[in-house]
Amino acid sequence: MTVYNKRGETQEVTLRLARPEDTPDIITLLIKQYGNYYPGADFYDADFVRQVIKNEDIYIAVAELSGGLLAGITGANQKTPFAGTLEWFMLTIRPSCRGFGLGKHLGSFLHQTLPAERYACTYGHCMSLDAVSQGILASLGHRITGALLNCYRVDTHAENFAGLALPFKQNLIVTCLPGSKKDAGLLYIPPVHAGYIRGAYESLGTTHTLREGEQVEPGGVPSDCAVIQKEEHRYCELRAEEIGLDFENILDDVLKQYGALEGQSFNVFINLNDPAAPWVCRLLEDRGFSFAGLHALAGPREYMILHYSPAIPVPFDRIAVLPGFAGEFAYIREQYEGRKR
Image 1 (spheres, one colour):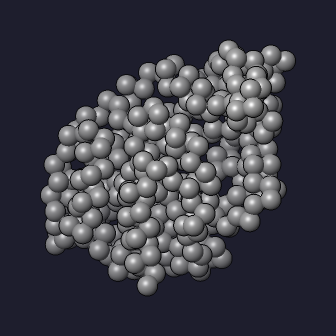
Image 2 (cartoon, rainbow, N blue to C red):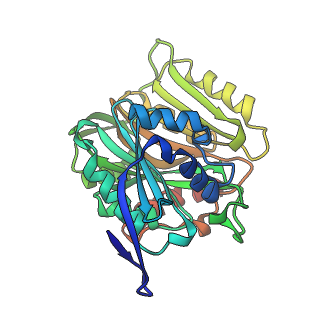
């Protein structure tokens, strides 16, 4: 196919799924864009990349120039932390090939190629230095549901970031495209955030039932929590799958273990299908966390996101949000700034 930029220049590209022999070029593109700090560190390992392409664990689409060089890549990962979901990720365009709309072409090609209807949803974690990836996903039907703030370090020497006075941490916009999951179930929500949560599920067109409350404390069973600390990014995720009486102790241990590290930040995912979710939200906000939206249709559960970065501010003035997503993001910013006052 022939693609054009605004100056009328053209490129001839072929869109196709990746082959194992594309591996060196895929890694080169990631290094050009992210330096040594791409959050999916496995993708610097050539054996890993060849294997996931061969096994189709991760679908990677490429735009190949007529000379055989890759102009760009994007992918969809079905080995996500949220069972039965797809993650749209890894959009990377060679610097000399930008401005030809390749990101949109790659996204559309991958969207049409994959059996997305087999998955509960396809979600995206979009970089926020510009709104390009958000626009691509919006054109495919994605809606913004939340944000992952201060979540990973970037290498300022990567070609994509050259010359930018970047913050230490990058921020991601969370988007969602509904798939096979048509009913989010019974959601226990804190009344203060009911308007945002109701609006998010209505925008997704997903059946749901909201039950507002704050007084239901956890049951006597132990919590089912996953704690993932990414040392190279000084970033911790705590996912509360089931909430028990020991949740507060788990939270205290995580904050004690990692909270004093330079540049450390936290995002907590709370299962909204658990009756104790509003109680946990209040606990976290009392500890300085702020509401950062939803990770919706995330397999068998629905998650509320809360953010905490005690030592580094969120650079909201550097975050670009697609105009159609601005209202949702304004609420997240308001919650964060309200906690900082």
